[in-house]
Amino acid sequence: MIVTAIDNPLIKDLTALHDASGRRQVGAFLVEGRRAIAGLLTAGWKPLQLCVRQGEDVPTDWPAVVTLGERAAAKASTASTPSGYLAVFGIPEHGPVDRPAGGLVLAGVSDPGNLGTLLRTAAAFAVPQVVCIGGADPFGPKVVQASAGAIAAIRLHRAGWSDLTGGAVLTALVPRGGVAPAALSAGCRWLVVGGEADGIPSDGLAACVDRLTLPMPGAAVESLNAAVAGAIALWEVFARPAAGR
Amino acid sequence: MIVTAIDNPLIKDLTALHDASGRRQVGAFLVEGRRAIAGLLTAGWKPLQLCVRQGEDVPTDWPAVVTLGERAAAKASTASTPSGYLAVFGIPEHGPVDRPAGGLVLAGVSDPGNLGTLLRTAAAFAVPQVVCIGGADPFGPKVVQASAGAIAAIRLHRAGWSDLTGGAVLTALVPRGGVAPAALSAGCRWLVVGGEADGIPSDGLAACVDRLTLPMPGAAVESLNAAVAGAIALWEVFARPAAGR
Picture 1 (tube, rainbow over the protein chains, first blue to last red):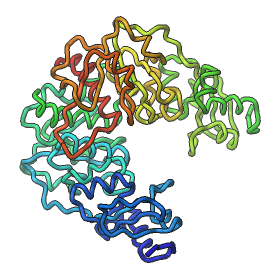
Picture 2 (cartoon, chains in turn yellow, blue):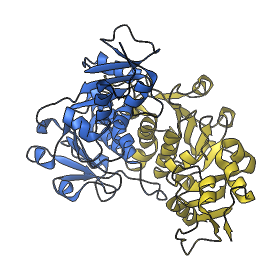
Picture 3 (cartoon, one colour):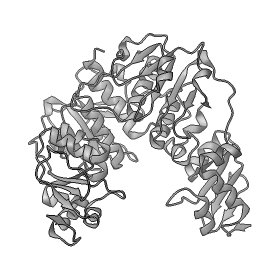
Picture 4 (cartoon, chains in turn blue, orange):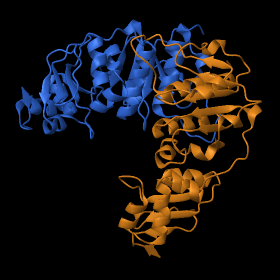
């Protein structure tokens, strides 16, 4: 069967996932691109839908695929240049936050590219879990794309500060006034990274017991890119100690 | 005077700077956005042209400003949503590469966002100089935007490998097979970061005496974003030692 009509119920179901409220209601999200979808399938994720544009090559190990006509595929996609490969996966539920295990808190990171890059970095450094408090929807298409498949490798929670109080020792990454990474206590398990414009909200900052600041010898530059600063802090807290500090 | 005609010679001069060949021919580049322009002016740069769209506020300390009509301003801009502030600056010439001083070599970094982010990070960490070999034009509008004004704080060379041979001890950042940062020799002064797809070209790799690899405990993830990997390596080579390793 080939779905060609852009008002087909399937296409309507797919376009409903273009915005955060639709994703939240259905409990599912879109993944576009052959490589990104293959990554999730390899990680053992089961797609709710798998769609390929007519004429595109279908990998032999992919489960039941629906073929979409050109216009239907364009309508279903969020990309300006659709890849022709589109899948729907359920948003995973990971139960409560594991406070003693530690992880990364993203508090108000609103740029989808930065959010996706931080998720990718967290996955590369085997960060135990990521807690998103406000900011962009981590299951939005631009975030999923920037995360380069990392969404499959991460235990991701959407939560509030109350889910972290008691048992989670939080270290805030702040642009100034914190200690240097070398002075960070070895017990640091949770890193909190704030939004691009306003940093960590005051209620969140109040919940943090330590503050970390990356020294910047280059005085002429105001700040690092948010994803870069967060990545270096993740490296210092999670990856460098594992590699033998 | 207000320039309203989109075929005005000034507008033609500005649009000529939209592509790399025009910038190279004229020896100048565009900076868009009030904040970015203000940053360069504060750093002492003298604009060749300073244009503001009719109706926008003009900072009192800005030198001679040309007012552009709505359509002329849109034509002159490379942005889909022009800020209304546009300046032309000369591409600076810094003389030969200072080999013993060290710095960052960007070899074939082709994504303008990644290139700009790496320049911003290098400036924040007071990297003595940056040498671009191939890759995106560092004076392209998307690079300048992503660099967030760092272009003013950096000694930037466009050069070839021959400009580095003899006197520059090069360390290649490679995805696998190199030593961990902690094992890096204290004499490391030059970091070489390659392009997103193909890494460092083979002739460049042959010129490197050391290889550095960031350990990635998260086996499920293939790689870090190029700007993130480069930033962490810059942190390890230039900023962390300065902050007291």
